[in-house]
Image (cartoon, rainbow, N blue to C red; front, side):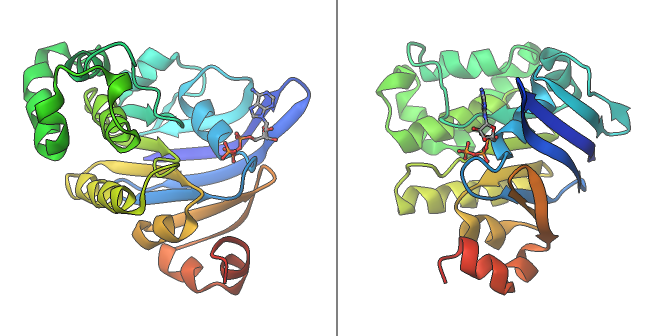
Length: 231
Ligand code: ATP
């Protein structure tokens, strides 16, 4: 579904991503793990946003490397950015409406689906985004991204700063989305949780892919245990 070839991302003279290659098969959960500054966020941003980059990004056989964000969203990719970034001064309903900018005719149907998937949000429809808890804001950010009916949902550090119980709920939801046929690209520092639900995973170090394998295999790797699982 997604094929990244020789991707490089630059900030001025800094090369944050140094020529990486990876693939995502339709229906899979694929994760990118790695420590702070490894280049995970830059990789996700380069797929949907206009950042300084080189290389090729192929989505469903279409080269989208030079496409504008709104066109990429229309093609079926949606990003839940790091730090959630829900519209603080808009209500939950209004946040969802914004997410459906390219999907207005299906708004009602999708809104209903989101409230089914995130029952916590129903009672708070009219509440402002900024007044919700961190976990609720994360759920809303995911629901907003789903309103454009993506085929590939990319999540940047969804578990960051959340309580363990909420993280558990969040990962259950990610698995449910997979069951519904949505392909997932997950960026996480919480390597254990990410590897547990991933079909395949890439480890980024210093802008390069240092290791890759199935979630199950990487969980057994001594290198991964030492560096990322605190073993
Ligand atoms: P984190 O989890 O901390 O976001 P990450 O793996 O997602 O880490 P990136 O945010 O992609 O890593 O950062 C990769 C490198 O690019 C780092 O060295 C970072 O300092 C640098 N970088 C990221 N954003 C910018 C920017 N706007 N300007 C300059 N350098 C940047």
